[in-house]
Length: 138
Image (cartoon, helix red, strand yellow):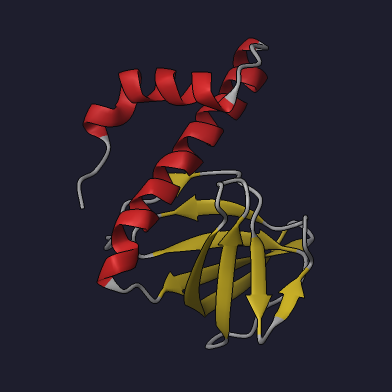
C-alpha cells in the first residue's frame, strides 16, 4: 500500500543533479504526490543522488530539493522516483504545484479526448468546480 496518493501528470520539468541539468525539455512528471514524484527522463539518475526539480510552467517557477530513490528503464527513457525534502514552509507551495499539475493534466485530457482547447485559466475554473472539493487535504 502506498503512503501517498499518486496523481497523474504530464507537466514538463527540469531535473538538476549537482548543478547539471538533466536533458532540459525532455523530462515530464509522470506522477506527483506530497511525498515525491516519478519523472520520465532521457538520462538515468543514480539512486541516492541529490536532485532539484524545477517546474517552470508556474509563474514564478517552483523549485524543490529531493533525492533520487529509484531509477528504472521505461520505453527508451528512464522513470526516476524523487522523494521531496520538504520544509514546513514549502508544504503549502507543494500543494499548489500539485493542483496546477492536475489542472494542466485536465486541460490536456480535454484536448485529447474532446478536441477542446482551453486556456489554463479556463481549465483552472472548470477543474476547481468539478474536483477541488475531493482534492486530498494536507
